[in-house]
Picture 1 (tube, helix red, strand yellow):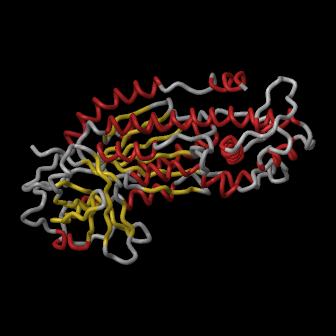
Picture 2: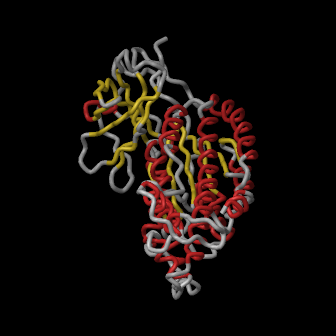
Picture 3: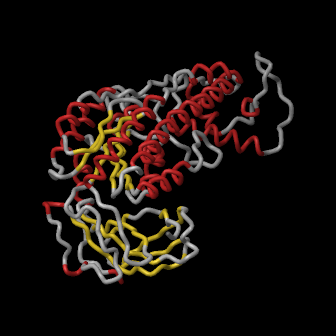
Length: 445
């Protein structure tokens, strides 16, 4: 087992190049964004909370007043003093009368004469070469539909080209054309799917929590893993054993499947952490630039456990990224480009007896982490089952064409320079609100 894990460990990519690229992005971002964005100044002791409110088709709802919003910090209600609408689309910089700034409101809204700031973050490690070409084409179309004064940049992870946000579309297009999928092919001798890896590791963990079984004969290696004892193997191990080996009394087969599942879990954890670290580095560097930013993540998915005790398990990384997004004033839209359903009915696989038990579960599991950190940042997960996300990218442009800047009155206990749990609700039937789950409340000056 140790040999299997070591061999797979060697295949995990390094993220050194990613961190170096992110450091360079920081400097360029700071200069560009400061020229384009204005900082917030408050006439009273208020904090700025930005939220998007959209209808079922993604169109921003633009006629809300402050009394329609309900804001809580750490579960306690806070007074919403003002609700200022910021519009970007079609060069419309004016605030409508219904969102007029009140005397106690924040007296300088950001970048009313400027544009939005987007960062396209492509998870090249999750895409095969063929898949990545469609993703690149969708990204190119997205860029072509931006407003002239919008800033847009490119960030590929774990390695690949990057471009700082700017209005220079030509450079971005050239770098996009060099993006190529780098997904590593992990060959499984026993055709284990990510869900089966999760189930086997979760069931082994649950088995280990119980009392030790009675002694049983060891295998040729002299080892005696609990799950390899005949009659005590887990439900998933037994199912895979019957599928792959056919011999219910083959202890060596059971042990080999368990070893492979553990090694694959380790491999997946490395890949997912590498991707999350890449997004974290991007958020950290975006924090150097003032103003509101939107990161659009395009990924084929990140496998993480949906069962207690299962692996791959990356802990509370979704919460960590949510807090980082709050500090950097960034919202994340995650597009899960999921072609697994189409592949299931391809000529090569539709007659195979090695298919996962539940394609739907596999799909949801691959999007689970994307959903968690996007939601925590105030964005959302968008599943793409057909195509490469062109329609969903159009929706991102639509939803981000306007947002509300709320002036919220904190208490003295809130002002400790830390992030606090945030919840924003709106009293408007048929609306969806996109708000971060964390807010950074600065210390008093």
